[in-house]
Structures are given as C-alpha cells and as structure tokens.
Length: 132
Ligand SMILES: [Zn+2]
Image 1 (spheres, rainbow, N blue to C red):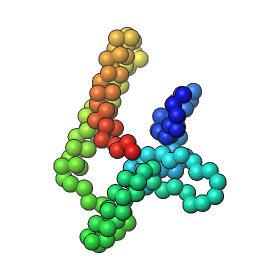
Image 2 (image 1 turned 90 degrees about the vertical axis):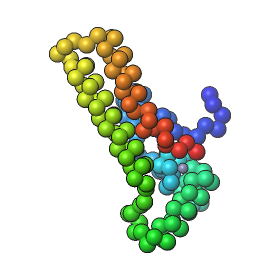
Image 3 (image 1 turned 45 degrees about the vertical axis):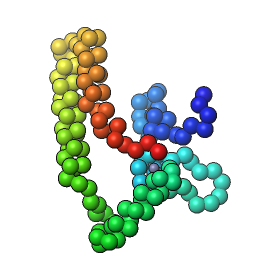
Image 4 (image 1 turned 180 degrees about the vertical axis):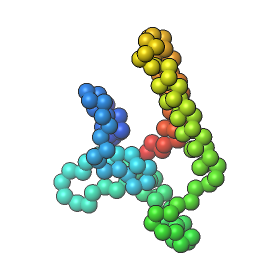
C-alpha cells in the first residue's frame, strides 16, 4: 500500500463494474479528482499550489482580454494537435470494432493487437494531462 497516495482517476475506477465515477470534485485547473475533504472549512478547489497559480494567471489574462467565463484562448497548434490525437483515436476505435467483430470470431492474437493499437492511439491524449 502506498503512503499518502493522492486519489487518481484510477482510484475512482471500479474494477468490478468497469464504471468510472464522475461523481467527485475536480481540481478547477487540471480536472484531476480531489480527495474528499474531511471536517469543516472550505472545500478544496485545486489539487496543488501549481494549479491554483495557473488558474490565477489564466483569470488575470482572461480579464485583460475581456473574456467571459465560458471563453478561453488556446493556440492553434494546441487545438490542431488535440484534434489530430482525437482523430487517431477515432480511427483506432473503428479499426478495433471491425477487427473484433464477433461474427468473424476474433482470436486472442486479434484482441492483443487491438488492445495495443487502442493504447497507442489513446496514450498521447492522456500523457499531456498535467499530473500535479
Ligand atoms: Zn490540479
């Protein structure tokens, strides 16, 4: 058992039912789940001091640009990269659905190849998520 382990999305993944709970409070900046606060006091809003600081910087910048609460600015490169990664994942999902079609009786080898392809396509999307 790991000491003082911060809860992660894995911790909220129920291995029995394969359901990811979304019923928890998230860091306002990085959206990582926050540990439930015990006792009185203000509930936590950020998972780390770094996230608190980035949120503050972003709010300052939003004020300067007169952005509303629902608007944000990201670079074209960031947006394009994200869209490309999502496109690759979408293709992988389509490939895997075809390759594992029950009517063609896929083999264990097919399942392994499908899982490897899915992981390869999904990893770039989660690697960029800031782990505080
Ligand atoms: Zn955070």
